[in-house]
Length: 381
Ligand code: F6P
Image 1 (tube, rainbow, N blue to C red):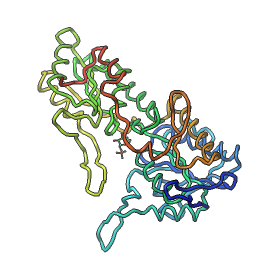
Image 2 (tube, rainbow, N blue to C red):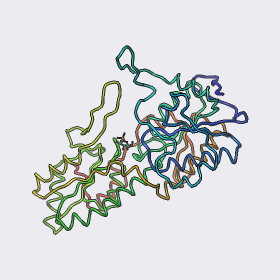
Image 3 (cartoon, rainbow, N blue to C red):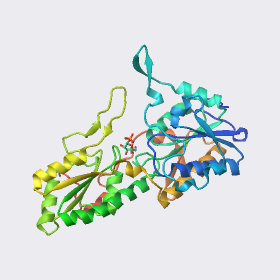
Image 4 (spheres, rainbow, N blue to C red):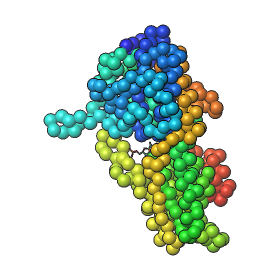
């Protein structure tokens, strides 16, 4: 049973000694490490504390349906740290704070978080653990303010969530993108081509930046540094003049030319429905071809970055996050999200984590390191 906090701002609370049953869900886009968190939570909650754990299917969607849950025991999570994706399923469409419902044949958008709170009560969940990115944490904060004791675990390949130094999933996505750059180097060099690699990351350039440095890109384009195509092309031409007849460009899906706009495969819709970024890689490749006369091709890594086994780093981080989420519950620290600070797992208020996106610092150390190596960001100044 959830117990309403005394003060509405404080949110839900239950005395830890009364906890019998907790729920866990994974929300937003999947990423490697989700299963390792589920394993950490289930093992620590059942073996160490003797609580029951219920997995909710398909993210918050599962709390808007009647029987979308399954009981999870230690045997159900055996070996899960290796497996990508999420055994619970997830959803990154249909935000419960602005949920599409049909009224007289028309789609209207409603806040359905009261329905979610009702289902949590019906399932007799004392606490809900949510594993997700910024969207999932905003919903988690909303249901916390409605009296549900919650604990958050930050995930996303984009690494854009505030408060935590890193989210799990990011390292695996960077490893995938770096591997792609390594492979593309040999073919680009053989054919004297420019290869443009478009990576994910939404409005932040973390994946492009780190994979670009690790994979030896010649140009890195990120949303935090709007680029000038003349500078990019001049850099590529200079490389050719000095004997490097190929170039590798890594571009974040949210990057854009100075004075220009982000490119969407599907534009954002009214009612706060997010768009689907995509297409900047092709555009950049075409422009480079035109300006340099060097054949330029594009590779869009897409969902490869979210698939497969987590890296060792992500397995460890996700496992530590899962176990610490259970510790937070046992300490009665609701409304908090586990996070990584340096090498220590700590916690912070969910509401401070969702205040603003964590962007790449355009003059930060990693950008400076890249520039010291001669990598161009297409800076216009
Ligand atoms: O947030 C994770 C992410 O992979 C972003 O990098 C990307 O923009 C988005 O999700 C893609 O979502 P979908 O799989 O719904 O197209």
